Image 1 (cartoon, helix red, strand yellow):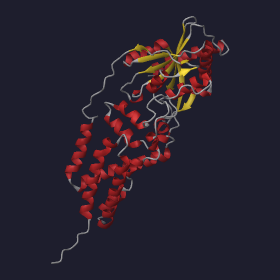
Image 2 (cartoon, one colour; image 1 turned 45 degrees about the vertical axis):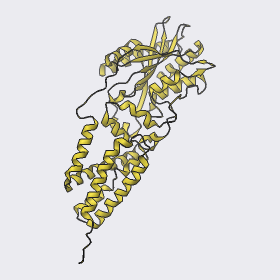
Image 3 (cartoon, helix red, strand yellow; image 1 turned 120 degrees about the horizontal axis):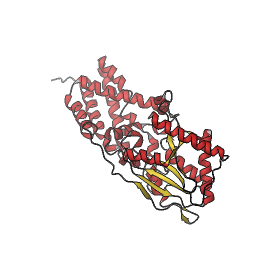
Image 4 (cartoon, one colour; image 1 turned 135 degrees about the vertical axis):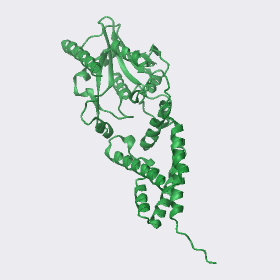
Length: 378
């Protein structure tokens, strides 16, 4: 990793020095081409959704550069805390095309290219904008999952070059962001489950913005500029069949197995442990919702299932306060009913349904154990 960062830094410095030598204006020839690069999906967390970059290639001046808005520094102090909070700084870097393509060859990820069919003046303008960004504080931006990422930044700089909002989303604008994301988690069950329960109402909005690389690729194929296609037909630079990983634990079967154990155990200890886990997750969701700047994590209605108030129910049960334990169990059953009704038309309904049913059975057991018995007088 350090070797890769060193190479990128060295190349960027060499590029910047050449830009400075040309007074920040490297002239492109008429043979120059500017392309949008779309990279295929990987099996690492950062690569689930693919990647977007811009390539500038000019054989007359031996320029072949890829501008990448998806760089971040793992050595950033408090990296995890900053990423969670939503103030982690991403930045644009420049790679040589050969190094860029070698990296994706090593990762066995497909790469596609769409040349922008724009005038030489606009190519030069976009190239100058990219180089100016590399030299300024504008190379940094605060990452946002939907609103500001490697794809949206590419859309923004191309649109600003064209002088209008030319590139807009084509297709899938009538389904939610959550529904759009779902297919990308094939083979990664617990990642799908985790994002399902930690994301709030923002991802249930209609996906009208381009925020994923292949959304941009598909939209470019249907975009026109000055009554002509904006981009040429997609060209495949690298082709690999994506391998869907298999795991003995990261699948729906282990998920159902654990919930079945809770359902069949029928012991107070197991019920308490299960409810404790749900309550701690709820506390985490609420805390992150207030702490984080990521709008995707706020307004999380999944706390109706993962209720922090379950912690009070556990304390009441340990204290053997049957009256209030029963009341809190009934209260959370009502939460579950409301949650289930609200979830019926949501994309993640079926993935959380087993947890809803298990929680319901556990809460019914707790309520029955603590319900005041009515004496029968004969």
